[in-house]
Image (cartoon, rainbow, N blue to C red):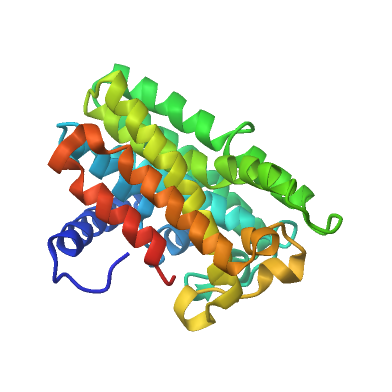
Length: 302
């Protein structure tokens, strides 16, 4: 997510990322019964360089609610597994048909479609194995499994992806499509971001008020993240964003710049980030890290 460690925010983020990367590498050692090629495809996609935004949110939420980063780490890794599975499947020819992800050939280009599909399936199921086995106590593990399943399932991320595909190449855009677009992205992108925060808070034993505030923060952060993503697809370059730009336009996808224009999209993203930051007021100075993270999402270039 960051390129140097010269500020407290950057130092903390790098620490989170390093913890996640080390633990993910450990979880990739599946052992007997897993074919070597499949294990290679799992590791290739899961360990590819990335921002680790979702696990970082999970650990930060745990910390802000008085929990420990180490306790939240298994849950954070499980969330990243679900995210990685979703990217593998999104990139498939039947979905978004991308051949580059995080600056590397996509899983189906590297390993073939069948192995890529199976790697995604494996990561999804591995996520719940990790959550059920390594999140303590068992009551928290069960609650976190439910949160993750709802966020990633047919009324969450998968449902949003389905509607996103259905919205491609529809009639000429109009302002009335904003509501439909937000409904897509509150599920496709936002649901897993919100769940990351809620799971981190749950592991920490957070209060209902704390969880509600973090949900509000995540909902606004998720929409802002998607708007910035849409803008990067329009204005970014391949070497920076790690994938081919202009794919949304090529596929006829419904996007914020398409409906609002670039300037209004940037303004809307900024407003959403301000709303997200306001949700952190109950945490006082403890909310400083998530405050800076929200500002980073707004200003990111990849």
